Image 1 (cartoon, rainbow, N blue to C red):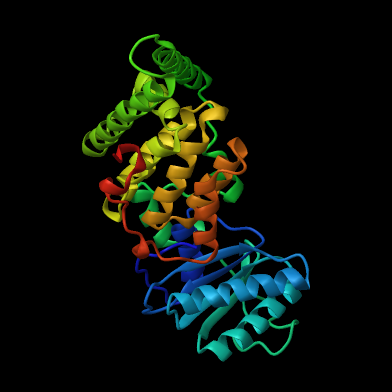
Image 2 (cartoon, helix red, strand yellow):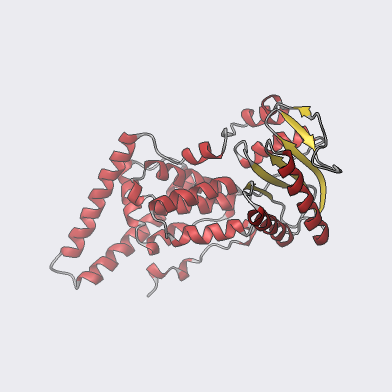
Length: 341
């Protein structure tokens, strides 16, 4: 689910140009539901087309619940498929379901990449016969996005692939720095003086947590990417959930876009075994900034590194339920367990 900014559409062609603009990629084999007009918490939703009747019922119920939860009352429905019968069935069932909940479908469209077909008021799966040609690449909204520097990926797979680092030298540099940070931690714990090893390990984490807080705040202020040494140290420190939560606590909606930049950069330079924490934080920041598609891709990237990572699971639940980012309240510093006592 993606939180939209206000855009105006006067035709199905405008809606089709808006979809990649708000999702960040061009959907394929997808069902998209867009908020029209005012709503308590406007949202846009995209899901893969269901494979069977059970899947269809699940998808429809999920979208219906999301709209009700966010106070949406008017929507446009767009299906991206060559299968007109499937599109007609989806729109018919959605319209019936939405009617029962007081949600009006003001426009319904099937698009196949070259032509769009209006399903608003369609009486059967064989109408309309001709369709209307469209090309989102020449639409004014697309040109506006280019001028604003917006990156729109060709499909969701390309968006997901954008979170996989391709600069192997950069990854190796961060990995070497991470190895040095790990060696420093091991040397601290192994010191014969200064109390038992668990106490020394705890003291080391507290020091790292304070450094993480200071380093992330510095990035939020100046936007300068972390060098390899700081990146490796940060990744190793965040293996501790308590240290990761120090970085997490610094997120709010006003700083979410800067957090997206920070954690995306770290994800691209992370060794696979250290990618879970920055990927989860990237996903959370993307959700806070209203980029649901990026948030989902970050969750998947996190779970590739660590399948049972708890923050990724919590975020996926929030995304599936279309929980509004407006509900997030940053964790107060006094509740961080790392600094307790």
